[in-house]
Length: 171
Image (tube, rainbow, N blue to C red; front, side, top):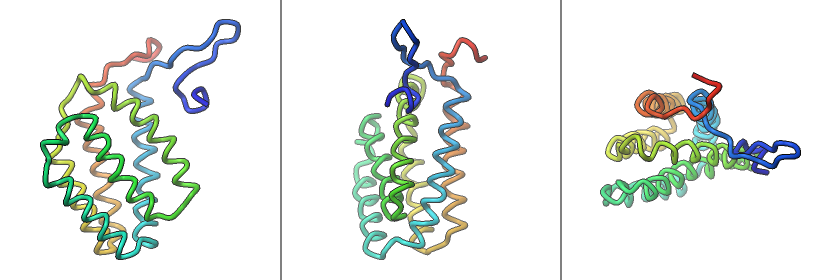
């Protein structure tokens, strides 16, 4: 439900309201996503086939051919979701896949809030993503995990500080 997923609050004998996000919650969601996707990277390296790795690389090559299309924020969100979905798919864990979909919903909620506050660094994302693919193709678990964690940390440092706080109870 929307309440369980963290999007609305049900107020007895009143109705419901959309929950305002806070910087602290946005950071928690990004960190949670980072932790779960780091596990996915490890499992993808263990369980991913050579064919899946080639398909992942091909997906990245196609996206990199027209980086200007990714300047559109909706296009970028679709690309980024599909990139990370490749990793989750290769992990071959239904439990994690179901969980990460819920996290992605919250994550996208916060990203949409950022639309007016920063410009996507498409070139850096493409570089980071290619580094991750290269490490995964080399079956280097530790390097892959480090690249992914640095990618998420860089994102948080660059953008979440600009996110306005809509939670009046939090400063």
